Amino acid sequence: MIGTSNHHADPRRADRERRYKAPPVNSQVNPGDDMTPDYTNILGMIFSMCGLMMRLKWCAWVALYCSCISFANSKVNDDTKQILSSFMLSISAVVMSYLQNPQPMTPPWSSVFG
Image (cartoon, rainbow, N blue to C red; front, side):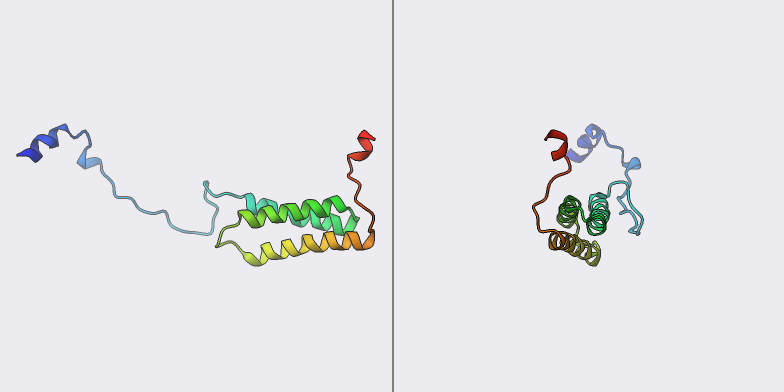
């Protein structure tokens, strides 16, 4: 009879209980997914192309920074080929910009304060 006295004190309703079902796994973006690696990967590719084509060293360095952020925030199941290609593209942008002009980089904001 101990169980019956405890049953009356229990505020939960047995008729309202629902068993948990995991959401179906699909390729669409869920609202809780973090899109930071994807955004920084795209930014890294854009900046590396700007660094290669416009010979802007600061763009190449920003591309390398974005690629490092994308690599650090990526998950195990992310596309490693795309992250690696973005990383290699940003490294090649830095190397090519310094091979074309070995002078030290002058940041774009240095002309504002100087």
